[in-house]
Length: 328
Image (cartoon, rainbow, N blue to C red; front, side, top):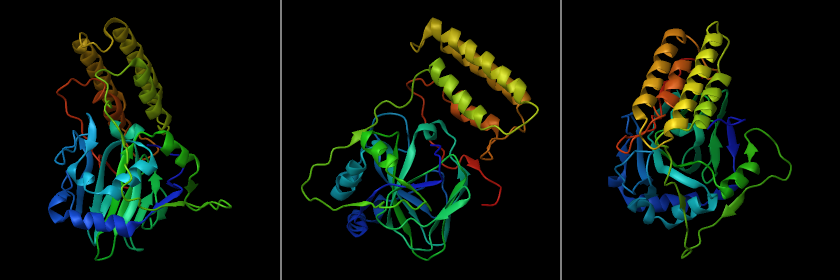
């Protein structure tokens, strides 16, 4: 999710030692390699599609995994933060490893924010986002701007473990964000609230069940197209691209008026997407966004690849889909 600042600290903190003990009790066998095979990166699924700890999908009903159900304080932490939770995991970065520089541009990331609670870490572990760099201390609670280039570097011999929970928001989480503190900004009287473990407390989670439309509405199409265009850097082809985008949106609006999302117009929707993608490929080469991503790549990720989703289609979130070549 695009934010106004690179990092925002939420006004909560937790007992990292107790969280670490719960994780230790799970054992090593629950850790899975990163789905894209990045060296030194592994995870324990906590909330997954249908509660399946082997699933990395972000489409479908998100439910607690058996691993999360064995960790009462982790459940409490998620409940206290108060989001509507999508796919969420423990994420481990081994010693002398990194999360390489990238921008999260897939459809999933447009509306999902990543909440980080560091559980096991060292001061040398640095999180870079845009031009900013911080160390997230144990027990703290942070969100960051996934639309900017970001990376994590662990230069120590020890592993780093964070709770990494994805959310579209929720009443509790929005209140925390409103009371948050941007990194490096002094706010008189600002402090975070310690939420101690409460054994026996029943923790209720709000979970995603509906997250991908079968057919994007013309209103969402317009929002996605405008979002990409707003981030475009000056380029001679932008005038033609604006014309193309306007024509495509009007075409989609007319198809929606006939078919809606009932499925009868899938062939016509697909043809409209193909015409748009082909023409964009012809005129949009070399157009970049402010975060270094190619405009064609962003349009394909946020519109073309996801505007139609049948019941059998899979949807993953490629967490390093846009490598950044500029120095960070």
